Image (cartoon, rainbow, N blue to C red; front, side, top):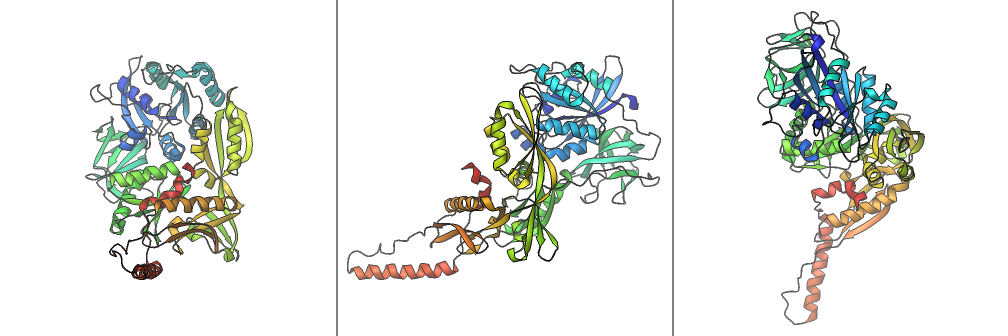
Length: 600
């Protein structure tokens, strides 16, 4: 199709503001999907997305639109996630577009992720169309929300489109605005081929399926293509588009979005961000690609059955093809055996990845408590990166420890300012600026340690503001902090999977809560099991799981009391020996006890 009638755009918003519902209405209104095949959250293909009502993976679809001027148009829509943990997914999607629909809930107004996504789109040079959704809700105030959007993007309230994605009201007007306001792709149709791989996934039968945006030239079936970053040559076996079912088109021209199947089964060959060109007449320069994602949270993933280690490796390899922000390396734990230290973009990302591994690859996993990346400055002047508590050098070798700080943006109703400030200060936050978006909503900026956010900060923020506050954060820098490693000892043996690095002021509280939780989770053995929390060689908390007692005197029916005493003494001696050589049985749920300490 003529490039002047192609529009590539993304739908961006805060979580639960109606992105997927709007995508459903656009598909329905343009006839891309029949009424019989229509279902809610059509572009959310994973069961997890449907169960939780959130978008985890960006998804691209092509629809055909007949405009009011009688001309046919081709829309390539990308529905993106809204949670802060998946902002890397959003940034990659924006690179494949020229425009974005910035969607805001008419009852909730501008949220933290709304601002973050708006800034991402503006930095990428996209044309942004402000859209107010859910205008038919009883609590909706579209005029106020339109004013908030204008204060962010500029322009006037007349530029804001009002829609109800649920009922379909305003969808026709939105489609016309997309045609009029969003720019055409503008690639060189006659130039050498350059196509950006913006996503990929693994198909059991077809191998790696790459989702591509053709920037220049033409990509056709049978072409010999080259991956410029990998310097590998492949053959284009199948080319097509998603409508949303896969439809073979045999070619993609400059400005179009579609998929490419080369038949390659090696998942390391095609990587997100690579540039595809013709092997015979390659382009001189590759496309910009993407910055490497930086994990915010690290956790150990271990199979409960040691024989599943290789299966876990293969599953992580395949999942990384679909989620390029996932980073991992093998590690060993004395308590859990062989597994992987995995880097995630946040706690929700960690939870989703673990659940996908268990569901999609039939694995039974144990996850250790999450930690962040610390810097250990050693006495000899060198610096060591600490991804897990076990990597922290001994106190005698340490000069100082630095922890990562993040810039935090919180948007809250003005009535909760005091509550939010109190919470952030208790988490070692430093106040920055405060801006009033309106008379009722306030934007607060803080500098906070990342370690204080990844555990329970988001839940506490929501509970203290009745769910009205929203949070967004981005990495800042490292700062020296007074940190210590708290070790947990079972039967005087340190269990590395329970160790964690915390601030000195909260070490006692954490140790006390952890040993209390483990006393409830660890079943009684045939001997007393002491559970201790320690900083170095100093014990700061202790609980004991009392021993089971077998009734060894049950067979004695009367007689001399000394006979019973002899049996009890023999049992006592046996328990002493057992305590010296016995191993403690620890259930898998105990290894994530640290995650739930704050809930009790």
